[in-house]
Structure formats: C-alpha cells, structure tokens
Length: 81
Image (cartoon, rainbow, N blue to C red; front, side, top):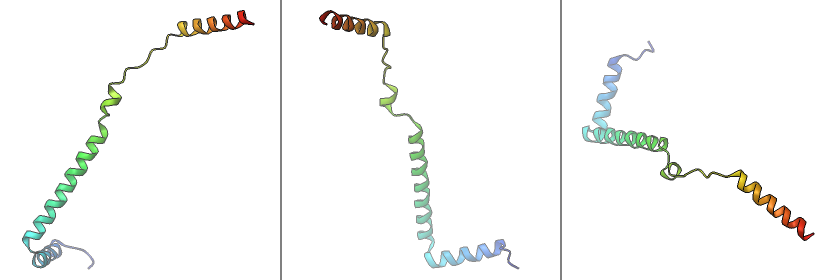
C-alpha cells in the first residue's frame, strides 16, 4: 500500500486523455518542447562574449613619454617662479 505502480500511471494517463483529448495533450507537449528549446538557446547566447568586447584593442601607455612631459611641466613651473 502507498506504492505507485505502473498500472496507476496508466489509469491516470487514460483519464487525462479522456478529459483533454489527444490533440490538446500533443499541443501542450509541443509547447513545452518549444519552451525548452528557447531556454537552451538563451543559455547558449549568454555564454558567447559580446562582439564589442572582443574587438577592443588594449591601449598601451608609454610611461617614458608621460614622465618626460611631467618633468617638462614641472621645469616650466619652476622657471616662472
């Protein structure tokens, strides 16, 4: 007692088929399949990187030019003072 056998599932399936009809059940299963496919497609799109992120070139900062410019600015400020 309390166990669900294959015969219980067969009876439940027959009752569902009688209540909803064969066309309605197949339509419902088709909608479920479309939903699963859409979900999988959405998950696959999330894994791909965006094209704008892959085309970005990194900027290279030349520290020698930056330090030379800073030294020149400091020298000009000292000459004015």
